[in-house]
Length: 189
Image 1 (tube, rainbow, N blue to C red):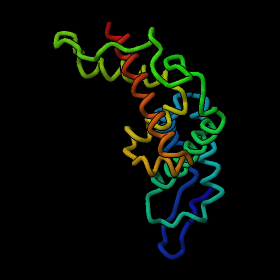
Image 2: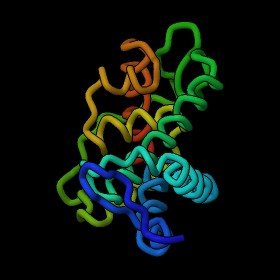
Image 3: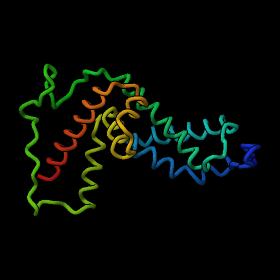
């Protein structure tokens, strides 16, 4: 496949024959941080390349190839999040909360989080523990937590993207944080 002039107005060209060598590793890492599933991340990268080839005429040259392709991948990831959220019942069984009122189960309630100064881990170890805990989040909570705290999206943007209500968003982000807190406490004790 040869270099393609994508936009006659700007004269920008894109190089689809170089995409896999140039962007595959970056896109895979980008997807893995958001979906936490190697096979799904590979599939998303492949779908991204196919979608980019299909929409090559829509590349306007207002951004770099990498930015344009990453934007396509972001949309593919959001589609996964939406499908997961639709497939999960809002009242999904939760091992930490009572279904009747949403309060903590007595044996699952976290301890107050006030670590002694001598117990504070170094930054690298904390990051590793936090990443391990994040990987344990249910997909719906992982999606929302990632969009809010790793991508710095506003709650309005997240709700619009995932087509959920503000109240659903706040319940899920709160539960994700509580799960992370409980997980970190177990790893540090």
